[in-house]
Image (spheres, rainbow, N blue to C red):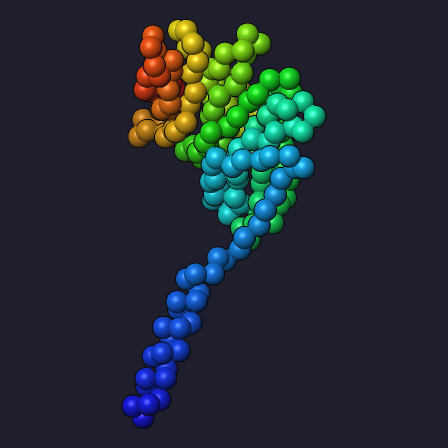
Length: 175
């Protein structure tokens, strides 16, 4: 009996240890060039949305990308956003209280500087609106974000200072 109990306990720990080290799924997606992910959210209907950016092998410019995945990680669709002639990189995403996807990041301007952006998208991938967060001078990039209790949005990142980068905190209404 003691030997049986020890065998059962050993098997229980062995199964649990191996189950914890094995991912439920592991999938890779992307283009023939470099692709980067920067944010993921799950919607109440159990879909996963992933954002980031993809580098175009021909133009060497990046556009931000949104992927919709099933709960088991299968790709349902992907969409690219932004100007194909300028770099536009998503750096994060959240699901707003109203059920919209809020994506933020940085984009290159025609003058070669970097400014922040915040986009609202619905869960079908339709771009509802985008605002630019323009620095006083130099460059600006948004890297983190949250929705506050009052439904306003707050983003953090950096802005070029007079001699170095400065911390940036940007707060706005829910767009």
